[in-house]
Length: 342
Ligand code: NCD
Ligand code: ZN
Image 1 (cartoon, rainbow, N blue to C red):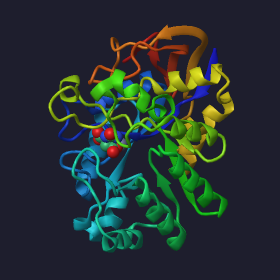
Image 2 (cartoon, helix red, strand yellow; image 1 turned 45 degrees about the vertical axis):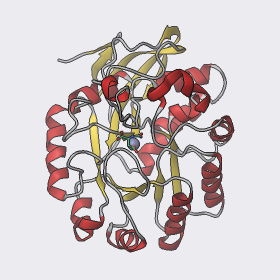
Image 3 (cartoon, helix red, strand yellow; image 1 turned 30 degrees about the vertical axis):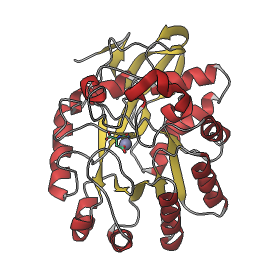
Image 4 (cartoon, helix red, strand yellow; image 1 turned 60 degrees about the vertical axis):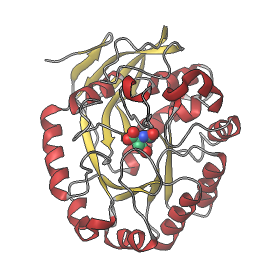
């Protein structure tokens, strides 16, 4: 049995408020525990979005009541509420700045808004970017000019990870996360997956996947799931919303990669616990750990998932290493495939 610390996922969509048919605080946090995550950071592209202090205050209180693991929320940057950013910060783990098109309308357009965000958001709290391609260069420039930490979500392309590597070599305070789906899937899987392979950023080419793996030990700071559940009906419907679930498959996939010698167990711990905790300045959880049976091989299935959406693009894949037990603050919360509620 391998013992890991309670993992941290820096990028989860819990869909509350407004998307509770896809996921809610209870099902999302149950999926987190089933996947070995005892702390999750939730995104603000909800309906309405988490752009106002009172909304984040309310969702924090709701999570206290309904969530089974520790949940922290990002505030959403919006050009309409710049003056409230300092107050918003008091309730948030960080600020999410959407520079590119994705699910939901939350977006920051224009230099004026970006500049104000960097002036108003308090030092010491992270700014996390959804910034692809050229937008990422803008984010790196802002990190350099204001010389303050900036985190890049779901880096997926060769040129993007190379830009982050170059920025780090220059000593700029940038960090980044990569998702398991960008490490284990590519556009070659699209004919097989169809709409279930649609997410933002879109799946890369094999050269992109290779570049992410080439940088896994030096440039990549975190593995984050970007758990973005949508119902199967929505995914196979007329207008496919981008996003796929990931909370319950990410540790199994990453652990399987350890068994294949693609990364070390130490590196997995750094990517899924130590670095996320340090980057977002998260409190330690006492007596909290995850037990993985390193010899057990099993097939990932849609059946038995805790996420409300009930599917995974990794169904049918066999992995080595099964999560046996999760203990949070001294209490067993997941064992033998089941959430334990006391
Ligand atoms: C996310 C979602 O569905 O909320 N979708 C996605 O494809 N990643 C939005 C996001 O994280 O950009
Ligand atoms: Zn996301």
